[in-house]
Image 1 (cartoon, rainbow, N blue to C red):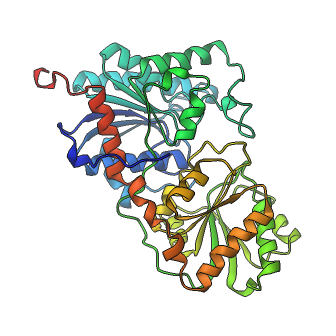
Image 2: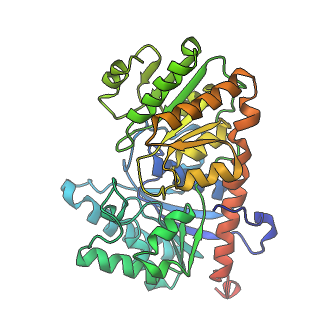
Image 3: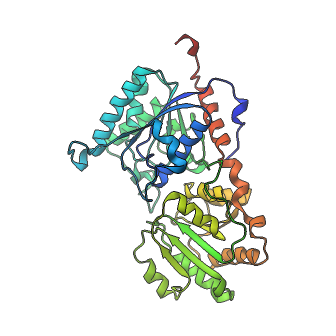
Length: 418
């Protein structure tokens, strides 16, 4: 489970100098990019020195913005365009790795960095760090926000941990596990899942959750006048069918149709309008286009309840990044999730919302009713507000966890002699 470590100020040592390889980071227009960009913002706010090597236009989902809250990132980000010069698309990943490694080499030659960080989305993100940490003897901390490679993910995302890998991928995973001084994962269940096929990650692995901005972009506006259930972002394999069936069951039991609305902002499910009509919910289900990250936060802040939909799995091993976005605005969370999983653990242990079985319309309807009754009584935020989770995901908590790792791998040894 997630734990809150010591506060950053309690740890000793000079501000670290960090080299970060993160193909998806800037502009922050997708889930992985936003998670990474928030981490970089926190690092800069803490006075650390950082160079970020990312990939131009990688992983963009939201309309891209580079100003506003993201403006401090521009001076520290080095964007590599793997398509430049007419390189074929199938070679973009190889071209990025080649250029990122060369740029990292130049940066390390110019100024010694204390530690190399790298992120696995997409799956070639660790390759430059793998090479450079060996050549320069700089400690490397590898982050794994998803199973690598994708076929190792649990169904329906992949085949499962026992699926065979190519010779190269087997070498890559094992080499990264051995070479990295430490490994980080956003939650316990993902870390445990990884160790089933990369056991080397276990003894030198820590949980560092996704980060919630310390100063939210948009503060919640108190109790909403409409009982609105808001979901932001794509759906993909996270089908909304069962959730909407639960909404229909709720409305059959509770005469709340005139006060209820369901908002899907930026879904990638083309059949969603037809699904809403088939369930006779077209009057309360509103499907809206993609928004910038900041605008999506404003939409969450204006809602009564923020919805997280997960795919049916035997075990929910993921910590969806949108949970920290919701925590930033303090809205109650309705997690439509596996019965056994990270979000069930989180909300059962700390509060901040309700986790309901993603395969059961009846359980979903019951959860919605509980939230509605609380909203109706004017107690929704007091009973289920997710701001109580902020300390778990705060910049102090996250950066303290990194500093503890850095101290453990002794990045400051002999620094005065360099």
